[in-house]
Image (cartoon, rainbow, N blue to C red; front, side):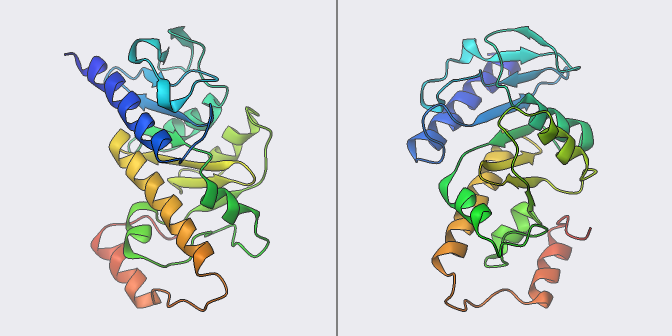
Amino acid sequence: MSAEARLREQICLLAKSLYDRGLTPGSSGNISARMEDGRLLVTPTGSCFGRLDPEGLSVLDAAGRHVSGAQPTKEVPLHSAFYETRPAQTGAVVHLHSTHSVALSLLPDTDPEDMLPPLTAYGIMKLGKVKLLPYFMPGDPAMGDAIRGLAGKRSAVVLANHGPVVAGKDLEAAVYAMEELEETSKLAILTRGLAPRLLTEAEIRGLVTKFNVEWDD
């Protein structure tokens, strides 16, 4: 099996896992992954993560032009912005409509610069600081501009009233970080108003240093 065929299978396998666990419903969400030659495999527009066909994935060239397969997701600008601004760190991008991260984006006292409270070590290690971006109409190219405006300083963002977007060094890393974002968001909502014990500044700094986490602005 070629590297491209393996990546096609992996996209469909992990997408179905996300769908089966209720992390993105219906035909929501999209995934892209970069191949060795710079082309992108992208989930098609209007597709369901539970029923993706490896042979039906969209292919974009290194310049982001659709060259084969089904019509790609309308949210390609989200993905392209991460590949452009974080080229060395980005091999895949995952965007979901996961319930708890969206819910956290709706609450008025969520910090837009660092929307996840420091509840767990893995929330820090896998995500760093998560930026809350404003609402954009789905498919609006301005979403990509907003990510470019971060100048590569965030690997994870949440679009208000919409959903999270995570970039990783490869597809598994992006999916695992996305799962951590959703679980930390869930913990934040479950413990809201209960005065949970947060990681201290010293504990956060220890994680940032030991695991080389992108943290400072």
